[in-house]
Image 1: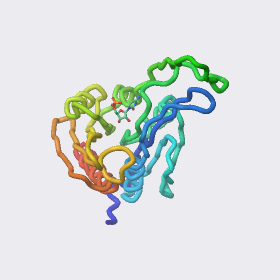
Image 2: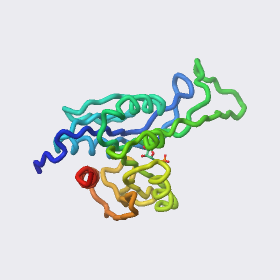
Image 3: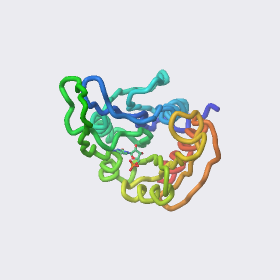
Image 4: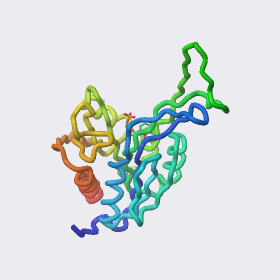
Length: 221
Ligand code: C5P
C-alpha cells in the first residue's frame, strides 16, 4: 500500500507507559509496551504525515523518519505534549500514563525494617483533558480507553469529558486485546455516537483503521 493520503499533516502520537519514581531504584509503572502507538507512528509516516512520537520507556525502536521525544514521567509527557500541541493537526494519545505519582521521591534508597510501609500518591495532570480544553475545531483529538469494566459507559463519558473526536476502547478482559499483545480487539466510538466493533487483528492493521478514521474527519472539515 503506497497511498500518501496524510501528506502535509502533522500528527503527534504518545505511546508507552510512564515511570513514577519512589526512590533512586524503584518506580511505579504499568504493562504498556508502546506497540499500539509505535504502530500508528509507522503507518502515519508511511502515509506521508510528519510524525512526532512522544514516548515513555519501551523496548521499541521508532521508525526512521519519526521525530521522537523520550520522557519518563506523566509530568514530563504533559510538558512535551503541550509544547507541540499547537503544531499538531492530529493528536493520538495511546500512552498509558500514570494517574498518580508518589508525593515525594526519596533522595536515598528506602531501607526496609520490620514494619509495613505505605506510599502517599498524588494526582498527576490529565493530559488529554487539558488538550480537550485547549482544542479548537480544526484539530483532531483521539483518545484510548483501557477498561476492565463498564467499557462503553466509560468510553462515552471520556469522549465528552475530554472533548475527543473519537476513542479507541479496548476491553482488557479479552485474550489478545490491550497491553503487550501484538493484536488488539477494540470498539471505536466517535463523538456522534457512531460505534464500530473490530474483531482481533494485528495492531499494525488497527493503526491503519484509526488513521482511516482520522483521514475521514480531516476531509469533513
Ligand atoms: O481517563 P483515562 O485515563 O482512562 O483516559 C484514557 C485516555 O486519556 C488515554 O488516551 C490516555 O492517554 C489519556 N490520559 C492522559 N493523561 C492522564 C491519563 C490518561 O492523557 N493523566
